[in-house]
Amino acid sequence: MSARPEAEDRGLTLVKTQLRGGVWEGVLSCATGAPTPPALEIFHPGGAIEDFTLEPVPGEEVAFLLRIPLGRELISDGVHLVTIAERETGTVLGRVTIAADADETEDLRAEVRLLRAELDMLKRAFRRHCVETGAM
Image (cartoon, rainbow, N blue to C red; front, side, top):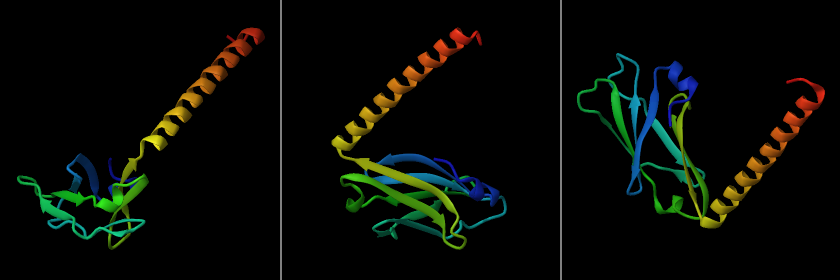
């Protein structure tokens, strides 16, 4: 995940580094001369996540390691979206999407297979049209 364009305009960039053991991690880089990170707001439809940490990256003046523990309420059937935003401006820095449940995943795979088949059909029809009209 990288920062949204409006966040980059303000000199903020959030890049995911890993998701391990239920903890999402990323590096928040701030504009040169910003010794402290912006206040963040992290939330999902069920509420806010308050117990995240934001610590300086050793050896980096304007980079901070963000750790967000993903609670049990986010590890359940369906798709859950966690939004990371700058508290003062509301600028969205990034989003974390969590999807669970094999049935929904299989449905999505079936939809992708169907879309690919339809795309292949359209490509064949377009090529046939080009040959018939001499456009190629």
